[in-house]
Length: 149
Image (cartoon, rainbow, N blue to C red; front, top):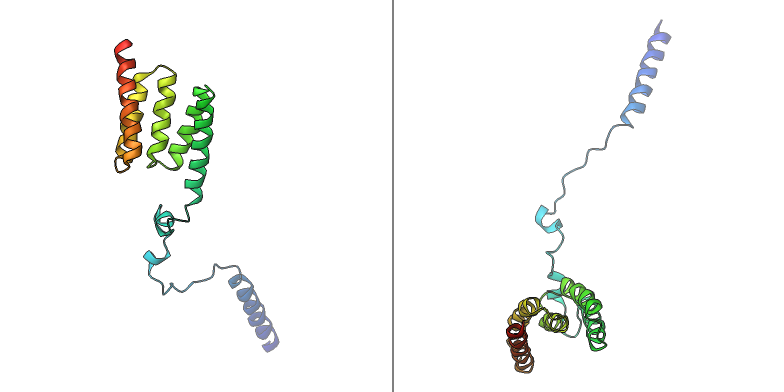
């Protein structure tokens, strides 16, 4: 009879070990505070870069702006707008994107859209005298188009 008891205990022990292997592991809490495990805030990567090392988003935006400007120079305002809108979505604080968008809408004969993008260009380029001169000249052309309209 003692063999049967031993056999039953052994079977129960093996069954217990087998089933405990299926249980989810119990993890000890991390000693790192939760806030330090969070990803850095959006834009922190761009802020940490040196001025000589623009982020990939900014570089992509500048390439799109150049393509949009080239299309605009070739009279393809609709295509230019598409490129420039993508440039704005990647780098919304680049006033040159807005300037060229205003220019594209001027070419299309839509002074209301041109005026809005010119206003945004003025906001983002106000510290640059050269660009502000261009923005103000563009604003005068928009006003002339509005008076004709």
